[in-house]
Amino acid sequence: MCQILASARGDLDLLIALELKKKPHMQDTLGIAAQLLDIGRNAEALEWVRKPGRRTFGEADDGLSPERVSLEARILDATGDRSATQALRWRCFEARLSAGILWEYMKQLPDFEDIEAEGRAHAFALEKSEAEVALQFFLDWPRLDLAAKLITMHPHRWDGGDWHILPKVADLLEYDHPLAATILYRALLDNILDRARSKAYGHGAKYLGKLDLLAGEADQIHPRGMVNHATYLAKLKTAHLRKSGFWAREGDGEPKAPQASGVRRPVWIEDDG
Image (cartoon, rainbow, N blue to C red):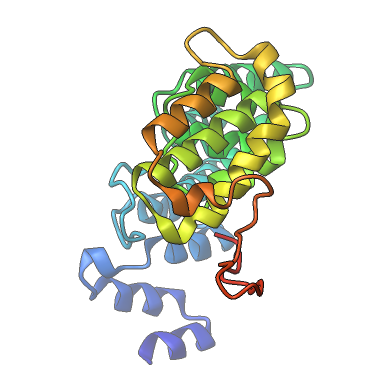
């Protein structure tokens, strides 16, 4: 309440004094730094933005969150230290592959240098060990062609348990990048069958239908070590022969209702998952 009153009065010094009474991990360091920057108290703003302060749950304690770096870079810009600003932004990009930070970095570059920097950033992302983070970057940028390249560079890396992300990515890539889409659909289908996730068999049937449609193009360009669709399907049937609940759905990607009564009834409704 005291801080609300201090803010209403425009008394930033009182607001800061009250903030300092909190435990360090509870202090709104970024909020105070932003307000100090707004009134030109740049040295104090820089001190506050670099304090540990409050963090999002699970955030790495490396001082390189895109939100914090973006603010610190603005403060450094205000002090005229452009080289330190750009070095900080690039360091943050390498650590987090933040599309927003890369965009801020490139905006400060002269013409043509931004093109070279973008190419350097893309090359770094393709070589990054955390392929999932790189994939998100290419989706955010967006460069679907590079997302597809990343997927095909690491065909066995993708976790079919990421059902809240991979189906959407595969759907985006189907038309122009059938091999990358195939890799993701196989990962999703393998996860469903390997774990006998019977409630997801409807989704699995849909993914198998997608694989059937993509096979004509994907089989022509699949890399060494990746089998063609016919071989993949044969192995799938051998490994999961007894999963009749799934194979009953093969053919149209939709579940087949029980036939005992002679009446077809919907028994499964597909959702976004």
